[in-house]
Length: 338
Image (tube, rainbow, N blue to C red; front, side, top):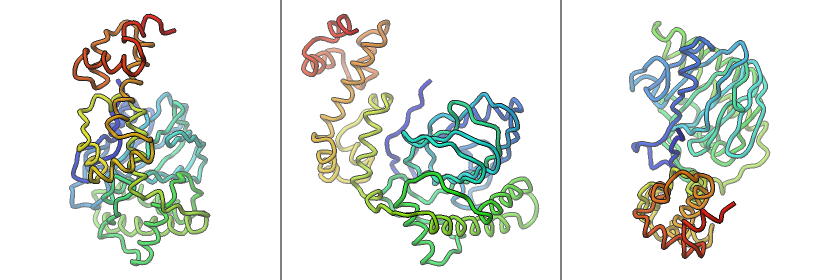
């Protein structure tokens, strides 16, 4: 079944689509990989209390030592995800860009970036990860680091700027980053022992400092425009057009604007700048294009079903809108489409 992917997350307190990790859970249950993790409940792993390691949604590692027949589907996370491939090779993609991770690479993805591991299957290797919620769901929101982050105020500002202004997902690791992740994995394994949380907080700060150092050395350019409100609308419209499951949502102009965290006037202005039309017209056009595709490909599905799945409230309104757009009825379109 396709997974509904919300275009842009509404906010830290709203419900949003995250990775279900079903393939990972199946691989663990069948003994294909060694797996250890701590979780706040959204992901597989030992459940942590909400007051332990605030901001950490998931932290852990997996170790696969043979050919694997599974991979993680394209997904988003509710926090910044940092992964470190200690050993092995692994296919990795973010949006439409594809990468091959080698041992020693680390990756950074933001909550709005659609990404996956495997092509379609992952390779053998040991992968560490950390998902840290800094209170953002959209590019233009301000980051709020957990209180246990002990970097100086200036270093936190610099790290935030480097993470916000560059969406390159793959970087070369350093001994400091590798050591921190290995230590964190030991902490996951021995979570119930005394003083482990303090040890992990120390390691987490070492990791963040190591990432800041690596980005300072490797990051050649920064792009402040990536954090603009216009960028948020651009991502929303892109997902709205690309993901057919989004079309059936009961969108209104007010809901689309609120979903992007801005007023109607500003949202409509950015929408017209980006796609040369108003938000509602863009939505209807995307719905009709999706419906036309379904009429071509799914000959056995009724026109009414396609209309409702595309977000139209009635087959009559769908037929009228379709004829206005394509110059013929849905039935004739289906009969003449190659």
